[in-house]
Amino acid sequence: MTSYLACIGTRPEIIKMASLHRVLKARGDSIRVLHTGQHEEMAHVLYRFFDMGPDLQIRLQRTSPRLGNLTADLLDNVDRVIAETRPDVVLVQGDTSSALVGAMAGYYNDRPVAHIEAGLRTGEREPFPEEKNRELIGRLAHWHFPPTEQSRDNLLREGIAPAQVHLVGNTVIDTALWVREHMASDALAALPPPLPEFLAAHPGAHLLLVTAHRRENWGQPIRNIATAVGQLLQQHRDLIVVWPIHPNPAVRNDVESVFNGLSPECRARACLTDPLDYPALITVLAHCHFTLTDSGGIQEEASALGRPVLIARDSTERQELVQAGGALLVGTDTARIVEAASRLLDQPEAYQGMQLTTSPFGDGHSAERIADILSTTA
Image (tube, rainbow, N blue to C red; front, side, top):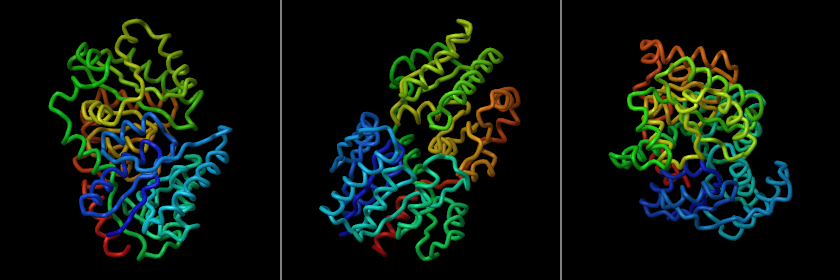
């Protein structure tokens, strides 16, 4: 029996580790979850939903909002836990500070590290600090599990030994399909208020799901996105919008300041909510017409559900979706967003051209492939 320690602490990490946790546990391996505390309330809702602990928790004692303070606090705590538990394998996912510190602490304690969703690159500074986090993890990990051929090729170009690189697909597809399969038939009615009432009041309308959370989009970029959404509501009377707002008060204030300037009729067709839990988010995504987002995870999940994506960024490490025709980079320029969204609303052939029948990120069996590889090499 192999012992695993999953070092995770944010909502996306939990979502993308859930399927591997389920597979390893079903096979009789020991997998313990270390919650690093980067996200708290949202994280524990997901842990309960996926029945995955956490088994160990860190209580961060941050004295500053600076990344250096977060990294130092995480490293001291994660290093201590790994030294005490001595797992056979440390599992890290993606490009968060928790993932970077988990890989560093595993390396310091001579514990081999498996990097889930390895090899994503923009080749630019952004996203910050994620781009450097994943590059650094690439120098520390023993197993690299890229989701796509492009991410695999990125690793090989960086000199990672081919025997350590295993193309497996993305575990987020496993999770999204599992959640959709396990959602009740009346999932829309089970959404948190005020969503059921809002959706019921607009039957047959085209639903746009908007999410924007990246640090580089805070401030004027968020206001640009909100302005574009407001213009779309004015120009398309059959459009409704659901926008789960990032918990940062500055983000909420920027969005609300724009939406408060809309006419009452337009404002009534927009529902600004608190962040949605994962089942609710997948439910809304499955029922939307298309999504406008700066989230990498939603790009992947939308592809699994056949929903076109407008990416509110100037670059993406998920170029496969753009190349497959399922997504379009629109940045945060108001005019570009309005033009691209209007095309999807007004031109059925343009919309159908962005509806993918298969996701470029996986087929729902990525966790099984990872578990197979680890079981024979760990």
